[in-house]
Length: 585
Image (cartoon, rainbow, N blue to C red):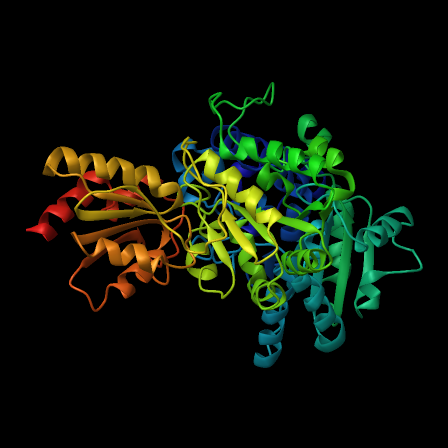
């Protein structure tokens, strides 16, 4: 056993090069132990084991600094920097996040979970080094899929044209993003691979970097030789290595997209070991709606920044869509702007991704879409508190971020019928841009309107007295539960409102509530500050009616248990009921 003796990168250097493949095999066993039991990023980590070993064999971390793009290929790095227990000891899995984390180790410099950032972050480290007159290697690791992101290209341009000192970019080319890669740069990467790095056109040289190609990206000895060549280099250099995503597990090697990330699974069969049930889901009904819409509406097109599976569009569905589908690569800003152009010229674009990634296109949504009032529909998954819980992937900030952009209608459906009706209405209308949040709770069924052209029109679902519960989107069912508890415990029927719109308020309805209510309770699946509930509270500011908002704090939560979080915030029905009793007294 080699891994059990490694407590820091210095221990890696003590191993003979001929024995390092055995270390790689042990690391993969550690990865299997963790990933089969709690899941995580599979393909990126299995494909980068050898390169990680070679990096730590040649360079001197943490003096030499590594910045991993997205950092979902950093598991082996963690195992070699004193954190192997998080992979070998089941009881200690929770000690390691799924991304680099400076709180865990001096060998990590940034908490990173979004793509295309490593080159810019590392470039900043290099410039800071130069300002202080220090001497160390700065290494940015980036996958080929991430190169399509504008930040990566901007940083390469700055590095090649402005830095003039030590800066090493490791391009981990496994011919894959999450799904297949899209964009012109991948033609050049293919030419470079096929020519063993000698193609006439060279994207990296065009930016002003030196360039080295290594075909054997999973050969430790070959990688050591390459990294030794560029160590202590005095100018920016790109080291382009060809790796195999998912290497070491046949199922992952053969199906890269499905094994980019995994839930807990059985190693022998590859099948999940957790039961998702056989019931319907909003995620499951979305690709069916998309395909049906595309068949009957040839103006309709799906635009995605490399996230087709955010709405369940697998390879088969993408093939069916044909030219009614465009993947811009990891380029959220471009995706939104392209969609605006499509809409301006008569098309009906639907932009799909996860909420955490849409934040990267805030300016394009504001400038290129909303100022121009182009009828772009944006459909976001994982905007709920109980979706993605890693600090880098939280979707809970979306409501506060996007509901305050003029002209943008933000719709929060409370049922399957409302969800589909909102989608139908949005892609057919031509008056305004629309953002729709996919509900994060179990599917509910209720009658729903089909026309949402009357902006910010709330629905009074139940007429009551004293207390009005305004429950937004996927918290509507929590509002129903709370209303039932109020009736049972306090002896009166409260009013229940389905606002549907998060981007504005229904002043007429809110004025009506003033007549026979003394308390308004708002429930929302997002942070309170700048969110939906505060709009209601502001409206009632000068009135006698009291408002109590329930939502999340403006805080970077990380790896929490969703229901435990709600309890800690006093958001369970029993806790809210107790608040209502106190306020009414």
